[in-house]
Length: 379
Image 1 (cartoon, rainbow, N blue to C red):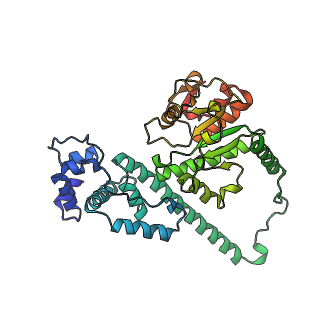
Image 2: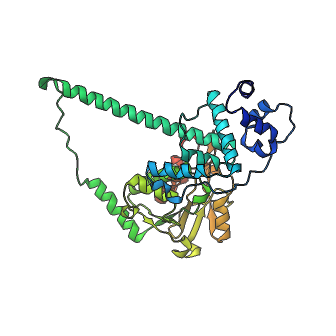
Image 3: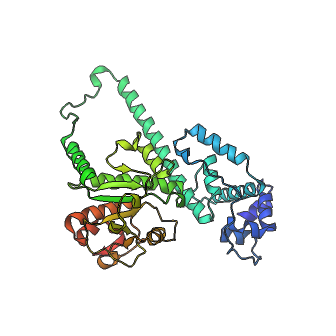
């Protein structure tokens, strides 16, 4: 594809030639396959260090709460003031996007200025491909929502155009239930747990290590875990620590709620868990430790790392627990499960479900039923 572009008078020809003339500076922005297509005879190695960022090109931490117009204007202002080196990297990334699009790779049709900023801050081609897939899914969801809305409007117009006798009558047998007793019962149980415990902590101190889409996914997982916890007869009191107002996960949660998180049945605080509880009671749950959690203890307070670690290989939660000299533990997954496909990572909502079930039964076989069946062969 790139050789064909070189033969033609395309506007990206100069950028491709720049990659060939300066291979060491631009090799990190092209994949190994593209590099071979452009320079099949070169012997330059691709194992280069990640290029240092000349300047910060991220939006401010409150960009999630901006309107679309404000966010687009802020991103365009940053892109207009890039230095020459960063502008050259952006041009090469746009070239890479054009090549993928012409190769019929699944990439989004339209990319906003804020998305170009996010792509500019990603260090590798594989990380950019992951962001492309995320943007494609988001784009398809929006198109599907628009089509469903248009279909509903069309059906409503057809219904209104019918004569009075042909209109469908709605059933009045089922009435909506206001002041649902089941919901009041759940809220009463959660309020009781907020006063008397037991407590479980979600540490949100890893905001700088995650991408925007990871923070969004983490917010969804926390809501799913909280919903499952509220349905339990004896729920946990969930506490989100290190949750400043600039934390992106907190902003996504507030955006999804539509109101302040102070009205939710959990506690959000900017303090660290060491300021709230004695160190000897804390147990940090991390998969990188050698110590296995054998049974649930009401005397311990368990900490869950608020982190989506698909693109992170470093043991951040274990390192933090060791630095603070806190006890660590992991679930005995290998003792009870035989893995078939996928990694051994568990989402935050799955960890919360396992803890809730373990608190009742103290049986690992029952608690680990919340692990997706596609990942295991048998117990």
